[in-house]
Image (cartoon, rainbow, N blue to C red):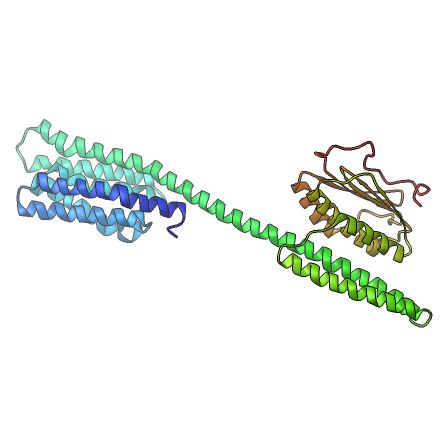
Length: 381
């Protein structure tokens, strides 16, 4: 794992702060307790095993050296009890054993009990090779070593849980970053759909119109071709702006564009503008208007469209809606999530042949003109 992660930083902190203390404890154990060079060599081997295990533990690589270090530490403890006569020989085992037990996948409690029992049994064998006072032998070789190992092992369990929580947080951060990337891809795909889908459908309509007029009105055909060229050029520019995160929709321009498209398609359109929402809301409302315009031209047989803009949002109503369940409009579904993410709400309703798409931002103070419901056929002009 990279040293830039939280776990990596904690491991480095352990190496810088805890390792010197452990090493000092091992050196003092050898210096103060070894009476012969044999005792010193045996204790030193145990200290080395403890250091190797500790460094491997801080690197997350304890499994590779666990068994050899545990065997050495256990052997040093037995050597200290039976040969050197040193209860301090428990040092190596009190470091290696507690680090290993919490990292077992199963039977950790049984392993902890077995470790403590091993320390007690080996310590009790001191009675077989010495005539010292039983009480002193019991304290030095059984009670104290068992207590040290039990306490250190108990402390290592919450330590293991702490590192598990750190790993979970790191994983959560990684997944959050991946989710952010996915969300950005969805947003980009939605914006690209808005640009390309809208443009291609309008180009299709204009080409169809030009085909009808090619022999009757060449001048109008030339005008339509110029508009198609300008539309494609504008789409290329918007696509580049989208790719470089510079795209901003202008609601006023979208209103004018929608009006021109509806009129070109022979649809009667009325725009009631009673106010504007905030700048960022206007951008989202422009996206809603663009997507709705494309849906009306593509899916409805509309003869009338009414667009109402207020400080609290926008509503677009059209007739010619089929008498069937609401169609699946993927673009609006994606926009609904984006509007909701900014504290707004996007609703779609169908009633009596009219289809209503409305985006509102409740946090904006509404005016006397509220978002309209689908109008009666006689009201639109």
